[in-house]
Image 1: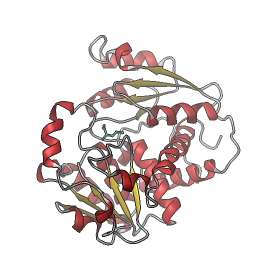
Image 2: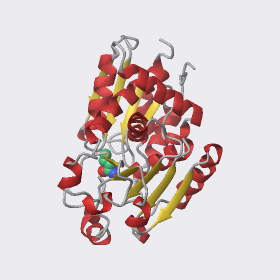
Image 3: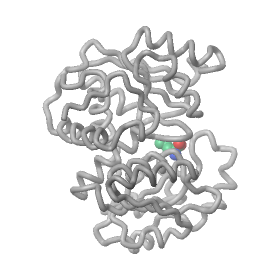
Image 4: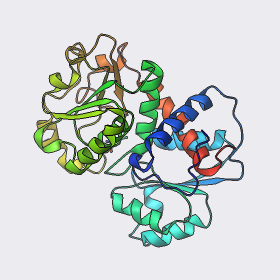
Length: 310
Ligand code: NVA
């Protein structure tokens, strides 16, 4: 199937249909082993970031350039989205100059407003609510390493945050058994769980909310964690640190998963907090492959949005 996403926005992973998601991962796999083509020659992607980034920016820039396109990056200080200038004005100006806009921001509402006013695709490059391009690279990695997605058990240990939400939706759409262990006040929001449960029906996926990390990892194929304090939540760091005691992924917890389980982290990792150095550096970690795969997934996304079949 030629995946044609022209004219679409990607604000949530669930903006893709399940078949589109699988086709996108298939395309990413093909691109990974293919000679570069310059299908995006003459296309411009604007990156508008209100929070720091290493991997996501790197992935978008490398993806765009390797496909022959150009990137323009605007840092948090430069634009002042909604402060220096209304979001809707920024969206309309950029859309007159670029073929797509990747936005890293706080509120999901900012992305929604950008999308309402932009005549070119708006891509969520991380918001407080979701991190869809991360989930694309993650699913690609699981598929590569485990040979399938359907029926795979993924245990997410920690905060029901942006990364967990996109992953949960992606797991639901691909028929995975998604378990998340979080302290009571840090669980996935009910509306995300409800949406994921709805999506999971088609391929027999399962979503389970737990509190005990050991219950989540028992028999898991994939153990995943992310920081306890996300960007923008720095004032809550101390409270969160206390709430997440007992949620560290260490070797003892990994030993409760399947013996061939892999460890994943979207990075940056805080060694000694959500994960130990031993697990990060250990043989089960696939984090560097995972980081690289975000670029391949984003290449597939950009091609489908801007030059399907090209
Ligand atoms: N949950 C993290 C992900 C970083 C890529 C954050 O939002 O800071």
